[in-house]
Figure 1 (tube, each protein chain N blue to C red):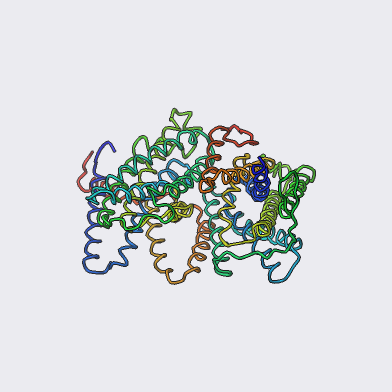
Figure 2: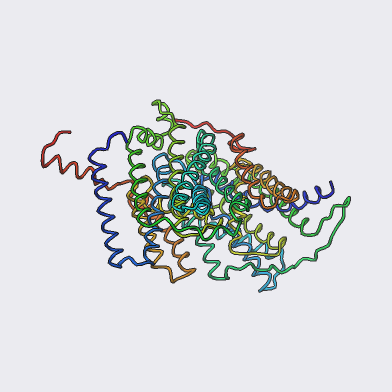
Length: 322
Length: 292
């Protein structure tokens, strides 16, 4: 975070290349309207998974309440973009409001429960996400209750979501590799040892949890303003589980893994679309089998280190000493 | 006041069911530290077993309860052997995800077989009504309460006075030390799953009898609330699960009486969070210091 050094520049260049590639594919019609929905769903899922991976993989804390923060972002985006004349501006105001509410909620839940050891965060976040949903269901004047809000101005585009995907990923990764991130990783390795080394355990756990909540809320807004409808039923416990499965599939602690898993599961979803109920059964069996045979996930904890590769290559060629 | 006591009766009946399901959560968590998310779905499978035994085979409802209990026990042990045992040595997250996978599988397999809709459980017992001080009891209330209390006493006897119960408590305290003392830990864990799943199975049939309906997704709502009950009571503690179950059941009905039925779930989860903040180990839990 401190330095925008060569690794970040390489990643930004890679991101721009990816954007150009996707843009060409869309222009050529390879990614048609139907596949664009899949593309967006995958990108949104990646943002969710990157945020949760910070909490679960880096801080080693279990959160089962991602859906609650996604719901806050989604509803904030929906309400504000409908209320404002300029829907795009409204969406960004909604996004900001969603982020603020999510931060407050994450602090209220996180600070007390993250002081405790064990599965308390998992249980508390599970409860909080359900409470968020109950309130959404009941605040009929604002949220329209169980029917949800439809006709949300569709102002987020796949390009915008791509940009947010790049920003959130670079931000989270830079945090992970900063000194604060390394302290957080130490907590995940051995909490007691980290504490003995002078790491403020609760502080770093709470920061990770809050960043996770922020990314969930932002992606929630983008998602709501892309699909145009939000209902409380979209944000059940199952939504949190979906994100959790992506993180665990890819490998807990591996951000590359989260990308791979989100893409694979997104594509699998398209392939299995015609099978109806069988799809969910296959999904369940696949989850069990993968966990039995690869309990660490597809990629374990390994990462694709494009930045390091390139900087090594640059050093090797020009013998640049940084 | 009369309405209050009337609702208390309803709350206790509902709480009995939560308590039965919560016992399974608490016992499994106590032995292998796994939040068994598939537990609610075992409860649902038990309910459907009872439903088909009664409606298709015309079986006596008490026999159906017993068979549902045995069937669920076997199902629980099979799941443990296939899905959880290979993961005994890997991370707890992996085991938890497997449990979620099993839950998905059971739920969707059931939807595929019987369809997603709610089914009406045939009313098999003659429902007589009793009045005590103006409070109305019916046969169903009594049935649920009596069966639950009997099972809880039975469970206490098993855990307190049998060899297996002693082994269960030993494994709960320290599985490795128990192994060194010659306890077959795998067998104890299977036994724990058998008992927990059996209790969930019979609870499923009781829900069918009490509310006259069963559905493939009923496991999620009952399962989560029973889990909350287990945590409120102190996860790992058997009396805690019972008290937690009744507390949640009564709270839920009382919130409904106050006319806030739409906030019912919020009250349940609110209680959960308050308990976690005030008594993180739950009402009956022991606060264990972690050792280096």
